[in-house]
Length: 483
Ligand code: ADP
Ligand code: F6P
Image 1 (cartoon, rainbow, N blue to C red):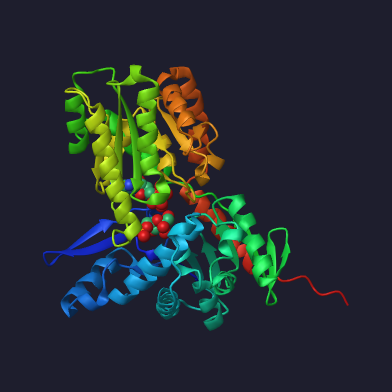
Image 2: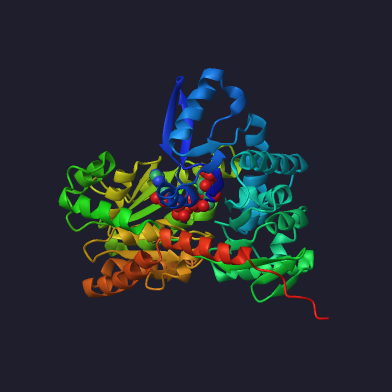
């Protein structure tokens, strides 16, 4: 029987040595949290990077890491410090990530980074080929591995290869600025099926492909090298039941599952029963619009001063890619903004912004979701954004409002949220006010529609539909040339 191998840069677990002791924690990020449930229910393996540098470990540590990873039904691709600096921090996160999120000014194109990106994609293909049998299905994920489909196909044409991009695909005008645009497209075209979160990303990809590679595009199919490659949109969902059931459990036993973080916020809040809580949860990333969100909250408080003392913004940011300068600058800017606004506006009994820079375990995340009146998900650009969907899944009492950026892929499916342009502070402030004042019946009406859709199109259905479509795409043959 053929198996399915999941491949992504990051594994569902992230390993670290602290004081010579191995720490295994769940990875954050939409890909890892979303695919985790698909993986745990399947019978295949997941191949990726452990988070550690191979050349900084002794043989005992290497064994320990192998064992910890095998326990999770995973296999690692060992990366050196050089690979991590150049392939991961370098080409993946200083070139592709900003380019694909329209942050062109942050994009660095370095030949050394590119060469390392090619070499690491090659490393991934070697490990995969050691574990794949003829006819197996390989599902490759995300921008760190754009070259992998072609590398695999060249070595073993019997494999069925799917590729899914978890971030936006930019317009041709932006993509064409990359010096290695031709090679990147060539790499992706090794797949039988290429999936994106939204139809807009599909359109941009087809436009880049036909203009850069001059292939034949027919509706959503590309004819290339005597093969047909299908391109389609598959909006990724979440493990709805996991979030919903955890929230229900929290409702029945709130004290037991209360996080330290919420206990502190509650204590502080006892003096003001009326006070409302607006929640933001993100990786600390410049695409997430964190400074804009803080500034628009400040703008709201100044535009509608009657809410001062009655609402707090709780911001949870998980550290991410801290070696990249833009992320360090963002952290500094966020620290300063929070400090300035709290300094300007706080009173003895009210602190407007509560900011936590850390990763939280699942039950504590649930506690935060459940305890919030409003979620504000306002990225400048985001492939999908699963936090928006997680928040909706945790609404068990028919209350709660989601404020969502139109720049997130999720906005294409979540019309009942209050949709805002994150650069428009007036509109955002007005929507914060509307959310705070929204009648209960309207909250319920919007939530009902959102929950119905998100529970139906959950991550399992997303994966099943992708794999079904991949199976069908594999058997695609190009139309016979007319004689
Ligand atoms: P991205 O993939 O860009 O990080 P998503 O919103 O799609 O963005 O996914 C983020 C995932 O990471 C969500 O599942 C969310 O619950 C998780 N997450 C975000 N912040 C934290 C945090 N501070 N602690 C733990 N998990 C977090
Ligand atoms: O969902 C987008 C994504 O880039 C994933 O590819 C990645 O796993 C996640 O965000 C977190 O980023 P990183 O793996 O660089 O910590």
